[in-house]
Amino acid sequence: MIVERIKTNIRKEAVEITSIVAKHVKGIKSGIVVVYVPHTTAGITINEAFDPAVMEDVLNEYMRLIPYSNKYKHLEGNADAHIQVILTGSSITVPIEDGELALGRWQGIFFMEFDGPRNRKIYIKIIEG
Ligand code: ZN
Picture 1 (spheres, rainbow, N blue to C red):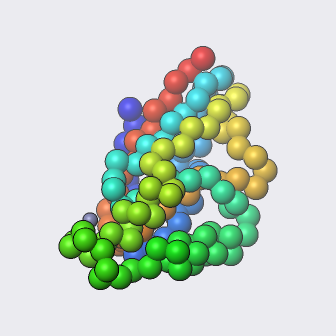
Picture 2 (spheres, rainbow, N blue to C red):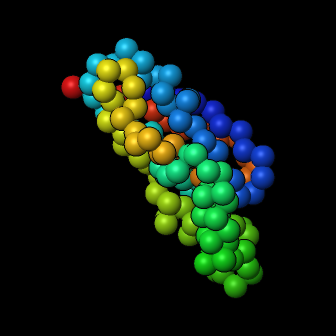
Picture 3 (tube, rainbow, N blue to C red):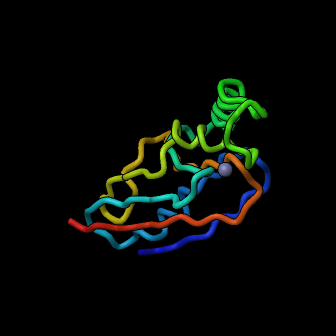
């Protein structure tokens, strides 16, 4: 398993990590790559990487739907982040063909930070076949 480290800079942030994943699948003729986030307040998703306004809209809507608040029972002060991760998910799977991620033209892989800034990890597992 490959471990990569991601440093986030603000509390809510979508960090595009497509190139970090892509460099590990070079030379793989065919297979899948699983990218897993081993955290409870950060997740991972795939969405448009062309217009940065898309992920800004996504983060703004997450904050509107699940606001930072003291109404929650979890006393650490980051319950909003825990809930936002459940909506996002903790792993993605992408097909690999001829050494490249088989992403759509506009797609990118985003590490979703909901309780930064922090030093984070992602696990990358490649299965050939
Ligand atoms: Zn917490």
